Each structure stands twice: as structure tokens, then as C-alpha cells.
Image 1 (tube, rainbow, N blue to C red):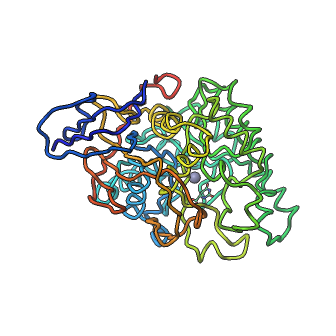
Image 2: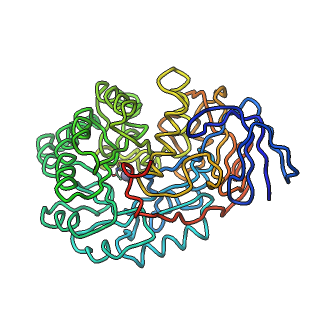
Image 3: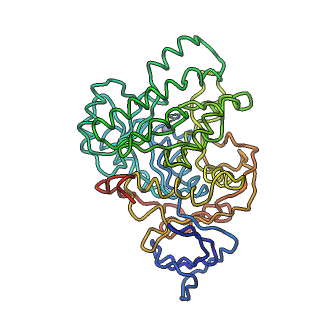
Length: 442
Ligand code: DOR
Ligand code: ZN
């Protein structure tokens, strides 16, 4: 099948310009100002921009075990709608992805269900070092340095030292210090005020754990990706930690502050907690000056019934997979940053961090994972329109300008006119870890 996409303004690695893009099978076959060729389909993309498909390196899709919240079909459809053509999923499912057998079971499930491309992290426990050493077909190891949703959690220093010393896969981590959290929780006693979530999981909890993980990474010269940075203070640690450390920030930490608890309550309860205005400003700055390289969602669906339990029985987590790109495009609309920067943070950088070949850029020979975005389109986020199975968004009622409108996965059109138009198009992403990660991959 050959598809010719004409008249889009295309974000190429070194220029943004009006060119035609030819898809042949699963690949981008040609990029040229005027391609004249007999093809199966011509798409007139006048007025639209074309970007590489988003690679979301941090999602929680709940299958197996918690499929009343989400599953690989509902989640991957939400991906297609949101312009996400590849997801990398975290191990805190039930059972958790802590053995090679469970990793392979997840890969098999996704092969049967996923609309978009997929990869799965393997979770660290206090006693699965052999799994972490032997695992292949994975972007890397996930460590929860503090407890969060589920029971995956490694705090023991000796265990952490061995994981960093004796494994070869890249590591990513949830950095909130358990001792600090427990001390703060004792102080706030049996509070039912969700705003105390940010006082219990406070700045210090994030800073202490991030410092600890960076120390491990630098001493053991082991690649480490700091997930969901939430404070301006953590950012200060990153410059000195190159070339071992990369970092990620999520839309909820870029766009919500503790002031939002009054309006949204437990809907914005998340780990790490949302922080202050000065933190969001520090995180925007860190993105624009390159101290944080990746924007990912941490899509963590829970049902509204679960979220509406009184704090602290309410679970932490925010769904955002189908709105994250629109949120970032909307920030272009208000002049915060450029489309090229968004493509860098959401497409190119995650491919570099996780050693994904032939994705994350629009270039000849690359996979035809492509998204057309309409930078002028304004639409309100509505709970009723969400594809995620949990069926709500903390951005309900917010109007965003800039939306993905058509998505291709490996040359197959999967989303168009507000609907999913093809299923099961996703493939397992190969990871070539010999490439050496973000600082080695140009
Ligand atoms: O808020 C969170 N929710 N943080 C996590 O680390 C896990 C996630 C979830 O799986 O619900
Ligand atoms: Zn997460």
C-alpha cells in the first residue's frame, strides 16, 4: 500500500517546511516538495502540520489484573486518538511484570490487542536480580524508590547497589523517598484533606530520592532516567549528572499546581504530588534549556468511583494519554514553546533515551508512524468523549487549541475523523541498547 500525504507542513529533523511524504508499506519512502507517483491513496493535508508519532515512555495500562480501569485495547485506542504511536508500559500491573515469563505474556497480549506499537518495562523487586540481568525485549528496568500504586518498591541500599552494579539494561525510577513520606504522614496523622498529599509527598521526598538515584547512577556509571520530575529543586541536580542521567516531566506537573486541589480535589492526587507555581515554572525552564529531555504522560487511570473515595483511600494517578499532545500544542498556541520543541520532547528524545531505531523523526527509511495535527482546531475536553476506559479527565471542560486529527501506525491509518479506523496495527518495538542512550544517540 502506498499513501501520498500532500501539502502538510512537515516537521523534519532540521527544518519545518511544506513537503510531500510518501508512505510505502510500513516505511517513509520519500520526502520531496512535489512527489508525482501513482499511489493507492492521496491525502490532502492542506492547513495541517505533520509530526512523527509520539513515543510515550511512561504509561500504566492495567492489563493484566485491573482491567476495570483500562486494558490494552482501550488504552491503545486512546493512544491513537492522542497521536501516540508507541507506548512503553510500567510493570505495576497485577501480577507485576517482574519475571521474564510475565514480560513475554504482556508482549503476547499486546500483539493480540494493541492498535499502536508497544514495549514493557521489567520491574525491580528485592529478589529478582537474575531476571533483571537476563531480560531482553524490554526498554529497561523500572524501580520504585518509594512506594506508590501497587507493591513494587525497592528501598534497601544494598539491593539498589547490586541492581546498578550488576545489570546492563537502562534503569528508570520513581523517585520519592519512603522515609520522608512516612515521617510526613505521621505528622499529618489521619488527615482527610487531599491538599496534604503534597505536604506528605513533599519537595524533600522528591529531592532526597532523586539525589539518591543520581548518586547510584553516577557511581556505577549506569544509565538512569528520572521519571516524572515534579520540583524545580531536582532540576538543579541534572547538569552535573550527564552523561548518565536523563529526565522526564509530565503534563500534570507542567500544568497543575497545589492551587488546583480546591477545584479538582482527589482528581489531581498523583505520585509524585503536584507542587507549586514556582515548580511548574522551573520545569518549563528545564525543558527549554535541555535539563529535562522528555515529556511523557504517566497515564494512570482509576475509575471515578475510586477517585471519589475520601482521601487518603482515593488512589493516586491521572489519565492523560489522549490529551497530552493537545495540552502541549495548546501551550504553543499561548506562545510558551514551539512545535519543533514539542516534537523533540515527545518524539525524538524518547527514541534516543530508549535506543529505539527508525522512530521519532520524519526521515526516509523511518517507520511511517505519523500524526497530522491541526494547530488551529479548538475543542473542549469532555469526559464523555474520552477513549480511556476510566472515562474522565482532570481537564474536563477545558478548551485546548491544537489537536491531533489523523494518526498512522507503521503505514496503517488508525485514527481519522474522531474514530479508530484500524485495529491491531501495533508491533513490538525492538530496543538496540548497544546504541548507548540519549547522550550517545544523536
Ligand atoms: O500517581 C501514580 N499512579 N503514581 C505512580 O507511581 C503509579 C500510578 C498508578 O499506577 O496508578
Ligand atoms: Zn508512573
